[in-house]
Length: 420
Image 1 (tube, rainbow, N blue to C red):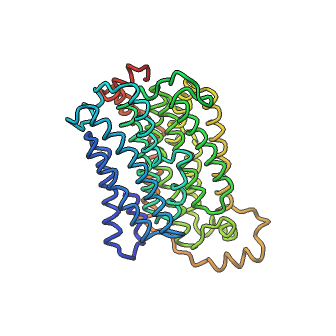
Image 2 (cartoon, rainbow, N blue to C red):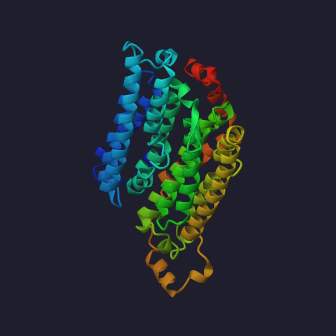
Image 3 (tube, rainbow, N blue to C red):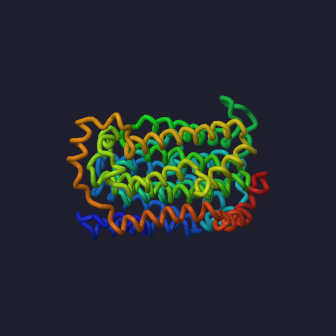
């Protein structure tokens, strides 16, 4: 709904825009509701097609390149997933694609050792797993505001959901030790947890030096999704619950950040260059945008009271129990997140007084006639901020639903293998 509220300004091929937008949402719902692996895969693919057209037609900044790169990465990941689930279907007797039934089948350990990384990486590509993350910032920057909100807020979560729902439940022994060491790694769990932490720190460092406002948020999404993947690899209930909660929390906060950058700022100033925005003193020209980005920024940093704090805290607690060294490194990633958020906030909205030169004043005067923040945009921002606050202040609202789900039949094999 928030995406629709921030799309009130769409004038070019409006019917087609919302048709693709709703088709994308339908595909997302289909993935989350499917217990049949074939239907899950079909809906997963259906979500890719509207993404491509939304970016290629209504996007900006190398939109064709961004759309094609996103589609190619998605299709490569989907091909890996398809190979894995078809192999599981054949090995289980080719009788059913029901996820609950397949989860009960005792797949050979050798099969799980190669099927798990194949399916996990196939889904994790869409979740922004380093080093397969490069489609994400490019796609975010090229996409129109509503598509960016959906892409960061929901579509990337499809990948993480697939990792948990399919790869980890069907092939739990793929997380066991190999029985030997290779480059210091003793299991796929060790490797993927390290890649998750590298993604947290690396994407944060890259965001710290970006000049494009939207690229800062794009790389921050990759960094925050690293916490989701790290939480999945902890294999304890605290970490897994935190990972699922982070999926929800990041979706809300990232959607709000993209709404501010894309709709409130870029559509009015026609620039995302932080050095140019620095000359405009947007805190005076667009005070509501400044306040909204400030609130979204501190929520993204993990300020207590917002949903991000609870989610990332649980992931770090779970990671400390499983990988103490990686947990400390991931904590440093949070500090990097504080740095790039404050840098973007200062440059875009609160420039230093010394920089208000004659050139700055003339630039600001040239931009004085900026469209006011509309009622639908204000309403959409309030909805997202209120949701993050509500979950942050009373996280049991979601955790009481998340934690019991790990006791379902789907996770029986994972529990028997020593996880959870």
